[in-house]
Every structure is written in C-alpha cells, then in structure tokens.
Length: 410
Image 1 (cartoon, helix red, strand yellow):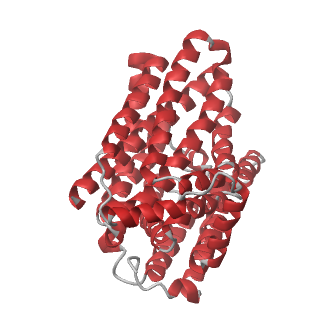
Image 2 (cartoon, helix red, strand yellow):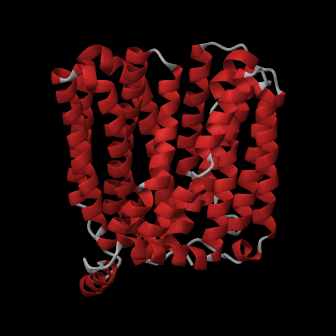
C-alpha cells in the first residue's frame, strides 16, 4: 500500500509540475508576444512574489481547516477552470486577454498554495514520517523532469494547437492529476484517530481567519529551528538581485547565445533529476544542520564562481553544481517543515514560511535590473551574492537549535 501511495503521489506531482510548467511558459511567451515589453515579463516574478506574501498565509488557514486531499482537489478544480476560462476569453474577448492572463496568474498561484501545503500535510499520512525525505527526493526529481519536458514541448504545442489548445491541454493534465489523487489512501493513522485530528484541524465558522493566522504565527515563532530557517531563507532571497539576471550574465558577460542560455536550465534540470533520486542517501550521512551547511556553503562558492570565471561552460558547470546542492537543501528544508510542525498547523506554517521567505524578492529583483541597466558589471553582483550565501551558511553550523536536530524522521 505504501509503495502504491508513493507511486500515485509522485505521478500526481509530476503531472502537476508538467501542467504548471506548460501554463507558465506559454503565457509568458504569449504576453511578451502581444506586448513586446520586457517589463511585462518582469511583472511575472513580482506577481508571484506578492501572491506568496499577501494571499498565501490566508490560504494556509483554509488548508488547515480541511482534509489535505480535499484542499488539493479544490486547487485542481480551479486550475482546470483557469485553462477553460482563458481559452474562452481568447476566443470571445481578445482585447482583454492580457489583463485576463495576469488575473488568472494570480488565481493560478493561489491554487498552487492550496496544493503545495496540502501535499505536505498529506505525505506523512500516506507514506509515513520516516520516508518523507525519500519521497520528497522522488517528487523533486520527477517535478524537475516535468519542468524540463514542459520547457521542451510548450513552444511545439503553441505552434501545433495554438493558445486555446495549450490551455485546454493544461486543464486536461490537471484532471488526470486529480483523478490519481482519488486513489491515494491514508494509512499512517487509524480511521478514528485521523477523524480526531481532522476534527481538531477544522475550525468553527465563527472563528476569525486572522485569529487562526495568529495561531499559525505563534506556532512558527515558537518553533525555533523552523523560524530561524525561515528567516535565513528570507535573507538568502536577497540574492535575487543577481539570480534574476542569469540571462544578462550569459549574454553580456559570457558572450553566449540563446541556445547556450537554454543549456544552463537544461543541464541544471538534469542534475536536479539525478540528485533527487539519491537525495535520501546524500542527506543522511550527517545531522540535517551539517548537511544543509555543506550544501549551502558550497552552493554559495559556486554562485560566486559564476561571477569570477569568464568561461561559458565553466559557468554552466558551476550553475549545475549550485542547482544540485540547492535541490538537496530544499528537500531537507521541506522535510523539516513537515516533521517539525504539528499536522493541524502545517498549512499555516508552510504558507507563512513562504510569505516571509519571499519578502525581499520583489525589491531585490527590481534593484538588480536597475543596477544592471546603469552599467554596473553584472558579474560583480554574482560575486557579492555568492559571498552573501557563504556567510549565511555559517549560521547553520553554529546555531544550537538547528544543530540539535538529530534526524529528519525524529
């Protein structure tokens, strides 16, 4: 039963990532085609970050009120509706399609906040706590495979079946993911105990969402390892000042072409797929804090090295190394969010973590673009960002609360 659940949830997440990748790449391409404005592309990152900061915490409250599979199915139903709605809007209201795409992007991101936190609540129930890192590794690997496939086929699909066809195809993939989820069975808790937990998680309608959100914040604030990792993630995302300019680094500093820029993402995705398959073994040779320190510090040096080297393919290698190490870091981080937070608060803590982590991203992404436009050498931004990551990694080595975590499964 556990193996069956693992296969179903991993396949479910593969399809979710595939549909998400096709949707994002297709609408980014289409919005740029009709506006011819680089700013319109930059707005995608701003919209994503602001959705995470403003809306996600309230979605976490709703996720904690419901059984995880129900929350995920709500997300899938709306996702399917988004594809159908955009197809109809394209056919009958072409003049308003650009505005509609941005509105639907916000709705899409909101639905992903139903699916992600709910999935994290569901995993311990269907595979057991001791298998969280292993399953997260598989999910990470298959999701990156799906993203790679999505990048590869999106342009082909647009040329073959057009915008309307792509939107309907995206909805069809979500329908299949939703159907697979129906067959996932809770096995880690007896039925009556599971009902008790869900009863605790369900909140009377008279209770304020703000009050529930404050409860989630209290749990996050009281969980010192998770709070510190959340604040660390927020500080790390200041590196968006350089990370959002990879295309500029490749084009202007390395002198690369669009094809060579594509190699960065392709090789990084392949590396992420491979490392995800062995994440359980790679992450278990020492305490989580030690493993995370090693992953983050070496990734920081790789990030820094991208700004030092002038050799394009050395830059690709360093980018792949950084991506693989951050995949391991992310898998461990996600696993700790699951096992160190009580079930009935997990949705709120997960979305609050995402909101706090994203706080610096919009401002630093815009700042990076402005600085680069003023002629500041983009490679020096990468050197500074890499050094910042290395400096932050030392916190993992010396903080007593993070060092006290013996094992992810405990």
